[in-house]
Amino acid sequence: MAFVITDPCINTKDTACVDVCPVDCIHPRKDEPEFETATMLYIHPEECIDCGACVPACPVAAIYDGPDSTPKSQGSLIEANAIFRAGEPDTVAKAEAIVQSHVAAHPDLMAIAPEQRAAAHGK
Ligand code: SF4
Ligand code: SF4
Image 1 (spheres, helix red, strand yellow):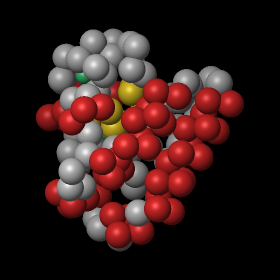
Image 2: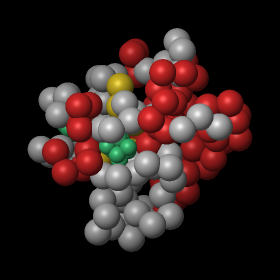
Image 3: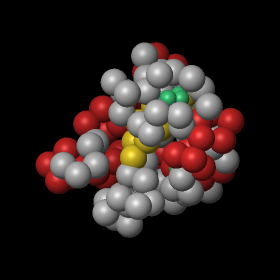
Image 4: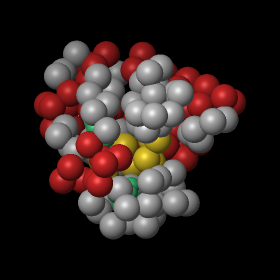
């Protein structure tokens, strides 16, 4: 039941979560080539140990503690987190395509500042 990054990370992407993750399962890191073009960051669901350290570190409340607690409006991003693998162009492209579809489907959320977006996620 891995943690999930959702859309307040878009336009924020500050890597505060990367700095506190004990198992380096959040990507892309700033030193990975995908960082500049990635729309958001992703948590590898099989490497995440559910420690919870990333949640209070995130300044925009983008991280949920599992797929079941992730709001419905963010559902497609569960798959994006699961697919993304730094260093694999195919999975990077697939994850980014999901994120772009999410952005296109939620102009209402995207119009809200990242720090207020989680409050508008609903369930
Ligand atoms: S819950 Fe822990 S292991 Fe999982 S992404 Fe967050 S900091 Fe990393
Ligand atoms: S701390 Fe939050 S906003 Fe920053 S990179 Fe991580 S998930 Fe994205």
